[in-house]
Amino acid sequence: MMAIHPVILCGGGGTRLWPVSTLSLPKPFLPLLGAETLFQQAVARVAGDAQFAPPLVVAGAAHADLVMAQLGDVPGARLVIEPAAKNTAPAIALAAALLPQDAVMLICPSDHYIADPAAFRAAALAAAALAAQDYLVSFGITADRPETGYGYLQRGEPLAGGFAVRRFVEKPDRVAAEAYLASGEYSWNGGIFAFRAGKLLAELAAHRPEMARLVAEAVAQGSNDGTRFHPAPGPFSAIAGESIDYAVMENTARAAMVPASMGWSDIGNWAALADAMSEVADDAGNIVREGEVNLLQCRGVLATSDGPRISAIGLKDVCIIVSGNEVLVTTRTGAQAVGKLPGAANQ
Image (tube, rainbow, N blue to C red; front, side, top):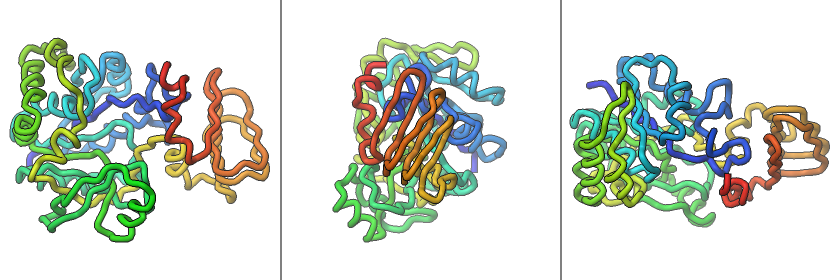
């Protein structure tokens, strides 16, 4: 098999991890789990393996220097600088237009955590084999709880190394999520994909022809600056942004999935970060990520501070975050709404 081309997307703002994640230094570029940032971990998962080509990173201009600083000296790595944030479909289409049409692309969000990189690479190889046969492949993350914050994939007929996708399901309510988990037919949609570049562009042209046309114009009129590529801002800014799921995956007749059990988390909020750090919890389920923290008669509390001491008594299932001059206190169930706070939305 030819080398797999990793495409690392750096478009997320991470507002639900405010106040630590900010517009100037968002979630992908923070060392939330370990010494490396989530972006550096994404790069490392496909480094040092001849089965993977050098990465193609897609990011906005505001974070281009951060990308280059954290990317380090990766031979052959390239950066595509989006003129505007237009969601994942245009970002992926840019990468597809810059790669050979027979290249198999592996779409990797830059802000996810994967505890088992070896399992990730095994799933990537299985996905690439299906993509080479012109399937559009999603990673189906093993669901271990009735999660209402993720989309789901329902497995269809078996394929070599995976399954056809019977249907895509948006974030369900609790009752539906419990039913999906009990059925054993559903996996989480982790937002990790594999496509042949030419097939992805053909599907985009079939289902979103205007987007496909504008992406092609942006690339044709774009310019190179060393290892950086700048799509033309005029046509790209005219694109109506849309996710790859809505634009292509839910419309194609060639949707497939590969099962992936790899300790995955999108680290979508503070509760998700606490789940990913469960191995360092004390006997009461409390987690101290950083700083001086005193927890008395508390259970299931995540606490982190880059300055003032945190002291709490008698709390359960709460996240306490101190960063600079900002203090956030939320229940675990309320953590999904952090991005709606004025501080997070108006950084």
